[in-house]
Amino acid sequence: GAATFDNLGAAACFLPDIDLDGVPDLAVGAPFANTAGPNTGKVYVFSGGGLQPGLNPVGLAMAEIAGAEPGDEFGWSVSGADLDGDGRSELLTGSWLNSDAAQRAGKGYVFDGGTLGGGGALDASDAAWTVSGGNWFDRAGWALDATGDFDGDGLPDPVFGGYEVNTSEFDAGQTAIFLSTSAPGPGDHVLSDGAVLIDGTEVYEGSGWWVASGGDVDGD
Image 1 (cartoon, helix red, strand yellow):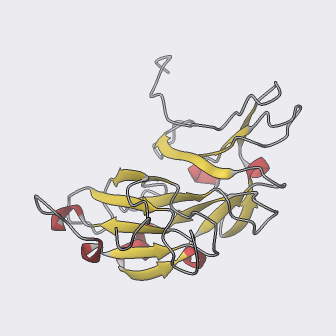
Image 2 (cartoon, rainbow, N blue to C red):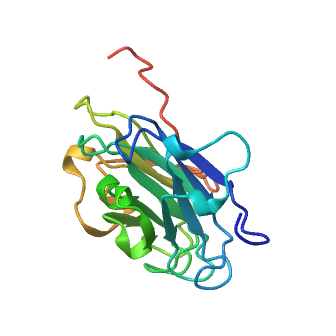
């Protein structure tokens, strides 16, 4: 990491390809990085073609994305996939303690591959669109993923978890699936805007604590 206690590597994922060199790229979160204040967080994007055996300092990153506010822990979760079919991977990252929508409601960010491919220093405001929790302490962005194609259109669909959403019960949690072909578009959105919602039904059930694509389980 760039500084003590940045917690670089708290989350990491391969990105199919951002810079179109034919090599998968790498996103690494540092949620405790003090960019705009304590624990603002940062995500580093490395070109796979530029990584070498041995030590690779963060200065080799082709792009750096800084979080918005102190305490947000931007970069807590990361995932990536080509959501729009243009050949460049998009990046998803979570800021589970963000308070833009409500205190600690959390937020997930989607960054366009074309924006990331330009490299350089970026920040949270460069996201193509975002998904926040709708209420206090929803914790949106704690977990996210973008590797499954749920509607069979050939594009992966992003999934965001908010494990403390109060649905029918306290902290039952909510998991929201957004379909790439009908994504909500630029701007700020909330978990309940998802095309498919999976709500917990018991107190403290925590739907959305962890999300991941399971592949084609039933062969359809």
